[in-house]
Structures are given as C-alpha cells and as structure tokens.
Image 1 (cartoon, rainbow, N blue to C red):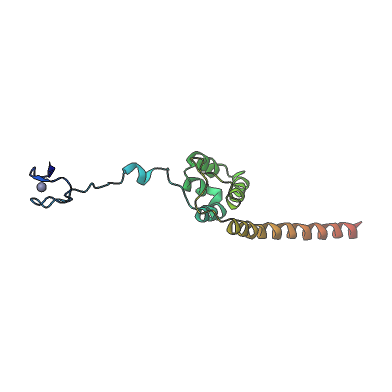
Image 2 (image 1 turned 180 degrees about the vertical axis):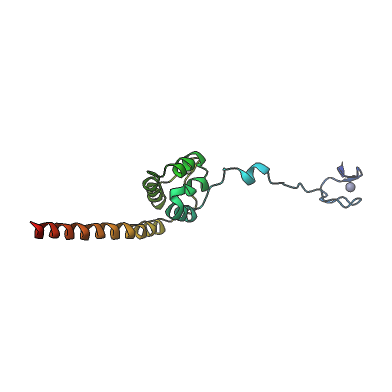
Length: 148
Ligand SMILES: [Zn+2]
C-alpha cells in the first residue's frame, strides 16, 4: 500500500488518509480566503441596493462608490451642479439594466419589472413638480391678462 509522510509529524501514513493516525492532524487542504478578495472592488453588486442608493444618495455618488466606480463617484460627489441629473440618468440606466459597474459588468439579480416599477415611482415627484409649474404658469398668465 502506498504511503506518504505526514507534513506535521513525519510518520508514514496511508496515501489516502485524510487524518494522521499519529498526531491527529487533518490532512485535507484548507482553502484560505485571499485577503484581496475581501476588500477589493472586484465584487459584483446587486441591482436593488444599487438602485436605491442611486435614488436616495445619488447626489453623493454613493451608488458609484458601491459599485466600484470610485473616480466617477468622486466627481459626482464634488459636482453639485450636474450630479442630480447625472445621478438620475444613472438611476434610469440601473432601472433598465443598462448600468455597468466599475469593472464594466452588469449588476447582479436584475429584475426588469422591479426596475420599471422603480422608474415609474421615480417619475411621481417629477410629474408633481411639472404640474405645480403648469398651475403657476396658468395663474401668472391669468394675472397678466387681468392686468392689461
Ligand atoms: Zn502526523
């Protein structure tokens, strides 16, 4: 029968043994997680949290940081002017499954009906703002008409 040496105590043991009979050490390979995997940006993120980050914290570029696009996140964080529109465009891209993370990969667990629902909900404040502007315009027009 073939034997091998125990890497812990050096006795001869059966080649197929998974545990040393002498020192009782397990001989199965321990797969240790690599440190780089734990903290790297090389993680694909889920669709729903990214969409919610983009909607609620998009002006701070949080969805960009979350998905590993650190440079764009920083630009969005410091460009107070265009970031609202930019973040909203990102949000629309996320809703329709077109958004890519920092590594150019799509988001995980994309759900089309949920994305379209989120997009529809996001339009409600927009519609309200447009409606209010329309009312104001009509009121101003009627005031102007009465004045003349
Ligand atoms: Zn041993």
